[in-house]
Length: 255
Length: 323
Ligand SMILES: Cc1cc2nc3c(=O)[nH]c(=O)nc-3n(C[C@H](O)[C@H](O)[C@H](O)COP(=O)(O)OP(=O)(O)OC[C@H]3O[C@@H](n4cnc5c(N)ncnc54)[C@H](O)[C@@H]3O)c2cc1C
Image (cartoon, rainbow over all chains, first blue to last red; front, side, top):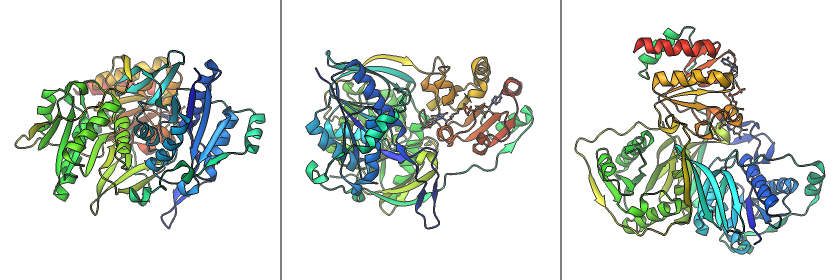
């Protein structure tokens, strides 16, 4: 059986990019964008699966405007041949459900055995899209997987993931949605040749109309009220003696 | 159909309501009161003792006493909650934890009922009749505040955001409800291994001692010894997990767990934002680091500069002496 794998990717600010709140209350984000950390792990995991299943077909999808194209070029450079942009910049900043709806519409025709996504994106850190795609498609879900073992002929997949105090090994048939946790795969740095090739590649786009879903209306679901600085702790109290430390901890009632 | 309720998805561990669960009920009671709504705990599975326990802290427990809900299955749990909504009406909001299970169930359920979902909320209030939540974005560099307009407003809440619910003067009631329960999603559990490696689960421990690269190898024993003295759990930075020294279940931070103990002692951890994001809602944070300029001190209430090798045993000794 030839496996079909869909991988969902998103372009987000690099984890070291400076993000700050401007005087007018909007966000100022340094222009350093990359394919999201956990999404690259998902891409690598798909490539790992193809190593053992040479006829596996992988399709990378990204929802949104120009930036989403960049994450698809990255997926291409890493080794994925089929990539597709869904929607346009009207989808940038849309909520998880709007994104998941476009993805689900595309997956209905692609018919994947496995859907891989990052466990959360490096911008909104929401962790919504993977589980939401599973809900919309009625597919089983395994979040934050740290290993995937595909038995294509047997039609099943074995995964491990953390479940509160335990690590669970679980098994499922196809199709299934799996989100990637750190440790699932080690994304490799693509070779220059492939990066160049990916830069020149024409990226297919499927419009919202072609997907046949009503235009995204996340504004009816979520309204941004503002941005805030992270909470700060009061100035640290430095102590030089363990007895002094213990006395303060006792006074705070934590020991 | 809608109902004027806020539901809390109650998590029971080892027959006890988790700390995080107590806090969720506390939040639901407080927010329900402001708007004249009713707070309800939803319990899945046949645990009568847990239902009774919950009724001590909330007016009414909605008990889905069905054996098909005894074992966790994301699709089955989401389906049962959807069934409850059909039977009872859509609540105004559903509160759940940031634990591994609710992080699957709640966004899946949100998609099934066409509603928005927000994770990792550190603050919840009202904006008119809508829930307003605050949550970290961009790895914690900034926080956003969102009003959730769709119903039910579905959120997962970070531990430490609210005080645990106090016992009610008169216990509430338990209402047994039977709902449609979908068939298993076909994900079967082959093996369950404790990832705490004999220790406590860090998600629900009151005291946590965490070690980083500064206490790798043999030095980590001192972290374990200090945790023992405190009757606490042991945790680690990603550096030690990546090095294969500690299991992933003990990792605190963005690609690990978010925890909120009463006391968090960070030993030999530099304080990268990815780590801090997993522990910055802890009540009291202590940092022990040989570098006086380490970032971790900015995330701590109390700090000691020095070699962990000397400080940790001395600290354990001083705590024992006090007991
Ligand atoms: C997307 C992403 C996700 C990430 N997720 C996580 C996560 O979930 N959790 C996490 O922890 N990290 C995470 N990281 C990694 C994080 O950025 C840091 O690299 C990591 O936390 C560093 O671990 P550390 O503090 O143990 O090691 P180091 O940064 O090497 O710090 C070691 C510290 O020990 C001190 N030290 C050395 N010797 C001693 C001694 N004898 N006594 C006392 N102090 C000593 C040093 O002064 C130093 O401050 C993530 C990174 C990325 C990019």
